[in-house]
Image 1: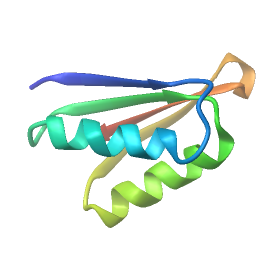
Image 2: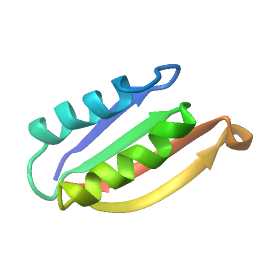
Image 3: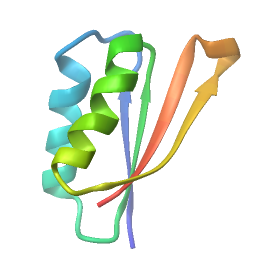
Image 4: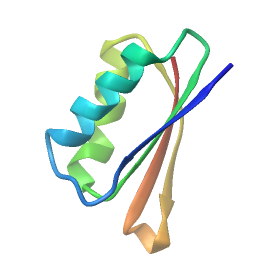
Length: 75
């Protein structure tokens, strides 16, 4: 089982979602995709997109006093 990290800190919509989709295509079923970002709207959009794609969001965690976030997704 692999772990892919998508670092989209400093990027705004739609870049974080586009980069996530690229990672999901590369990932194998069971892989963990970790998305790190700073854009508040993406923090909401990415989990909604994951649900639509049938992927499991394991955790959404705020970092650096809420200035950054990290989303862990099971492919």
